Length: 325
Image (cartoon, rainbow, N blue to C red; front, side, top):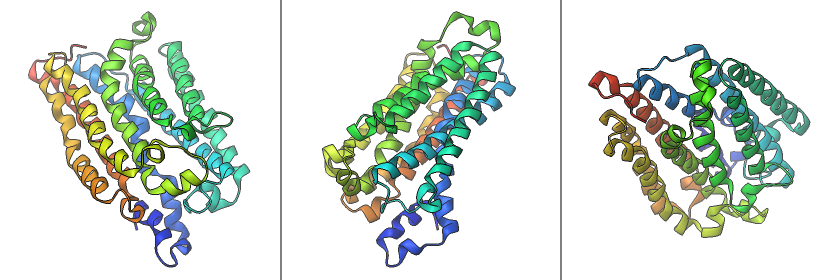
């Protein structure tokens, strides 16, 4: 049984008694870690496209640290949602619901945070202090999203916070981390970070946006005014094609301007799941049991789109067209 099916089990007779192993598989959320690793993979593709030296050791350290920090975010969000009661019935695969130990889950979250930040400090020590500062900013944005007393995600502000964290901030940190120590001394490369990170960050934000559709009633009942709650599922579903178009436009514009090679258009391999997502939400936005897996279609678009773009940028020199910006 897939994770969407596990979540959907609450709509089926006897579904809450689903096998705990399957629920744990859903709780781990391993596909979601594609959003954590994408900024540094894009930065790696960009550097290879420019014919610049790529520090593989830094790449691996950044990848591990990013996974740990997203684990902190996911575990902490389970704890914070348990505190508000929004996950009591609608999320049987919440780690807090599975273990019944809020305190232990919070301790594990803190451990992931500390270990992840320690690894990022090592990366920063070997490149630029700004790496750690940018990562701390990303963590702060993640806490503002769900943590008390802010809980900005409950006010419908989660999507802009997500774009900032996974877009220019994380991409800027990754670009610095993969640069030789002296190369990163000139400050944060905001220009390349914005050009490179903006489109993929829209795709990442779409994953968060789609995660709200199947839980509108629970969110509204517990005061979580997500964009889908505010707009209604019909109008929210109508925005999904614009998310996809914006993500691709921000990636394809540099190709048209001659900044990136034509191979950067490989990000278009994410279009099939994007089309399936648009069709699914367009037809069934009001049926939670049918759209519970919509965020995983969005995640497939995000992962394929980002990997396609990273590979396309790296292939530029093979065509004699290095990445210009």
